[in-house]
Length: 269
Image 1 (spheres, helix red, strand yellow):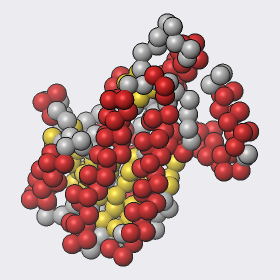
Image 2: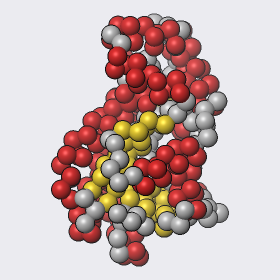
Image 3: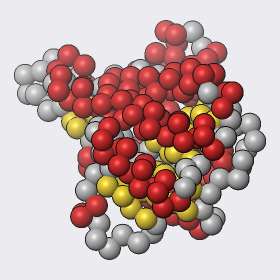
């Protein structure tokens, strides 16, 4: 299929902006989205629409605007997401609901809104930006891992359900990249009297250090473009440093307790 019109959620910064900028340079018509377009008055990398993935009415309004202008929608890139850290026992329930509403329910709402059009036009591509963290339970990032892991599994199911419509669904799973995600991440407070105080503090610093020293998000943009160029893309495409991608191979071949020990050693827990 010759992809021409692309919609990217969370397109105003970070990985989403890198993807949009790269695809625009490749000649595609790109629409990015953000919850508050007024915050980006000078944004000119590509077209920017207002959209909140937690509000189905907002989603439909943005999708309808693209279809009214372009008459088609070839690629949806579910990139909008939020980070969260904290001990599972001490993370406020409202924050758990928020991360799932954004990282899982949001993409589901988006997918539901575009599938009728993709069926009508005889095909399309949906790329879910998940995370390497979604393939394993990471300490003090359990809810983030779980939200991305849920989207991973949903993608596998959806591929089989949509195979007769010419719609392709793919997970692109980044590792650590230098973006502003840490600034917007919810951190459960480090409590002085908490039994998790020391290990959580150490892990929190390690997480931030990995993001700060992460790779160029343009690598994710290039991976997305390669998926778009593939006639039969695989369900999962991890993107990141060699050791991050290799960790997925190790998880498949090592006994569970051995792999768990590797993670504990990595985080010095």
